[in-house]
Image 1: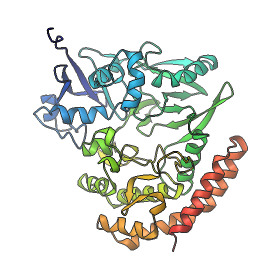
Image 2 (image 1 turned 30 degrees about the horizontal axis):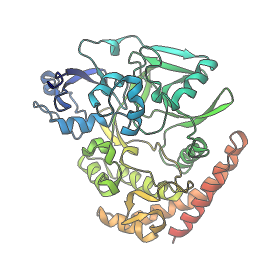
Image 3 (image 1 turned 90 degrees about the vertical axis):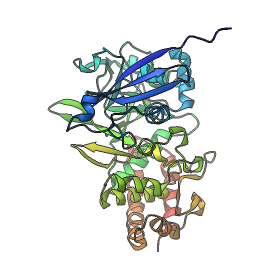
Image 4 (image 1 turned 180 degrees about the vertical axis):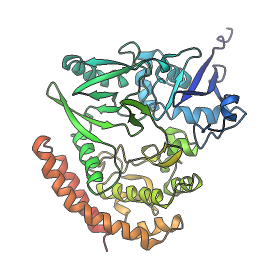
Length: 418
C-alpha cells in the first residue's frame, strides 16, 4: 500500500495586527517550522513573539515552534472533544491553529496566506437571551462553541469549557472574523460543585487584599448562573478594543503545555523567577509573583501551574500579568493536593509550613525576612477580607463554598503565621 500523500500548509502569524512571520507545515512528520519575515526581523521596532523565540533570520525547528504555538490551544483532553466537531486529529496542532487561531491569548492571530479578515471592520453577533442560553448550554458538547457560527474562530487555552466573547450593554456578543474578544464566560463544572462561585470568591478575595487581579463577576441567563472574567490582555483605546501581547510561563520557558506541572517536569517557582530576572522584570514584579504563591497557598489552590501566570507587554515594557484562573482546589476531596509548584520543597499542601516560605526565598537568593514579612502581611489581611466577602457575595450569589474556603484560609493562615 503506498504511503498517504504528504499534505503541506502555511499560516501567516500576526502580532498586534502586524504580520511578523509564517508557519510552514508538512504532514510527513507532523512538522511545523516558524520563521520571522526578514523585513520584520530587521525593523527597529520589531518585538519577538516570545522570550523563547527571539528575533532571528533563521527558522525555528519543529519542536520549538510546536511548543510555543501549541500553548495557544486548549490542552489535549479538550482537543480530543473538539476533534470530531472540526474533523481534526487531536495530534494535528497545525490543523487546530488553522481552524481556531483567529483570536488567541494575547495579541497573536493566525491566518491562511492571503486572508485579510484580521483587518476588517469589527463584527459582532449579539445573542438574545434564548440564543445565549442555547450557546452556553452547548459548551459541554461543543467546547469554545467551535463551528457554531460562521466567522467565529477563537482559540482558548485551559481545560474548562468556556465561551470567549464580549459582554456589552448587558448582552453577550460573539466576535467574528478576527474581532477581538474581551471576556471569558464559564459554566459551572459538574464534578466541582459551585465552581463558578469558588472562582468568583477566590478572584474577588485576591483583589480585596490588594493583589492585581483580572475583573470577575457572575451573570444569569435564563435563570442559570455563569462566571465571567475580563480579559487582561485587552485594552480600550478611543472606544476601540485592542489586543495586548502576553505569554504564559510555559511559552516563556519553552515548555510543552502538557508539562505545566512541576511534578511532570514543568516549571517551578525558581524557574519562573529566573525567567523574570532574565527578562529584566524588576523587584516589584518578582515580589508580586511571591505574593501570588502565598495567596494560592492561603486559599488552598494546588492548581497554580505555569500556564496560570503570564507576562504582559504594554508600551514596550514587560510586567507580571494580573492574577487569573484561581480557585480553592482543596475543598474538592477528589482533586490532587500536590502543589503545581513546590513551595520551598513542600510537595503537598499539608506539608507547607512557615519555614517552607523561608526556603522558597533561599532558592532564589532573596531575603527570608522579606518574604516572611509579606507572608505575615497577607495572612493578616486575608482573614477579615474573607469573612466580609463571604457575607457580601451571599446576598446575591449564595453558596456553601464560601464557608468551606474560609475554613481553609483560617487553617492555612494559622499554620504559617509567626
